[in-house]
Image 1 (cartoon, one colour):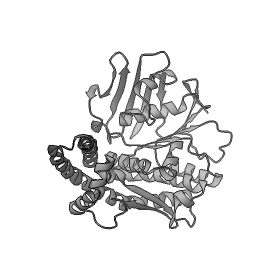
Image 2: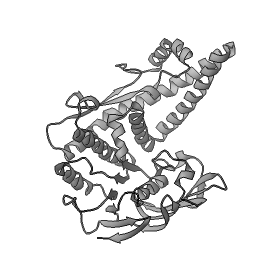
Image 3: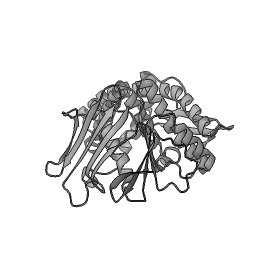
Image 4: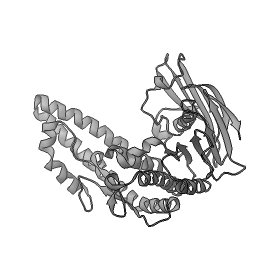
Length: 371
């Protein structure tokens, strides 16, 4: 899969940009606040129907404008044209695939597999379990339509069950408790499927992480991922066990008006040589693990979907010594098309680039081909 062309209109700092890309490495070079990360976000938007920052549609508008438009041409087997249009007058954003509107994100997710590495990836190894769950869910959702369906259904159940817990707290009506049993059944069914899929994923994915980590740092460090479902339950999860765990905390859920049991509370623990990375890892180990996770995601999705994902790397080389940075640069030459943002080339003599690579200089929302 590759992005051949990208058009950006009134999106963040970009007024009107028309970009053609190399099918290999595309270095996007510019100072802070000049619009280089916006190019990555536009690509990500077209691949997933949403941005990778927590912004409203209106916040992506260029100052003083009332609409934005993104369009792209993707190749890989077949050629597809995509377009996103947002207007404040209409109050909505519409996604078009080959000229036809797509109304559900599930109709696009996985069609254009994408991998994104940003400075915010520090949350994966140093932040809350939410970031790690989001990471795993994003990979599985691109790899499996069934998993995405389970996850969307489960999130609806959580929302409905939360509202019902609030009603029970306020009114204590008998029929609400009966309704809660119905939602419990749905929670257990979908939740068990999600846990099973996640457990199998971690079993399969760990080997990809090990391979990626050794490519970046071929030394005696062993990465590991430990999945901790249902508050650390160690064993096979089935619906009976899930229901038992749910019942054990039902009283607490009613008191606190919170969904306390299920895969929405799970965590994934990253380790190096048996030690918890979050607690004992150095800054270099954290960054190496984050990059390894994204390379592992790339190759996992490629093997599962049969298509090379689009690789987006925002400020990938910060906080890395030259040895690790050089190994990452070599590694990138194996992936196919990738987009790498950088402030300049002055301190990057370690880069391994070829004549088929492309440099885009970005200044004040304008991009030009450079050297």
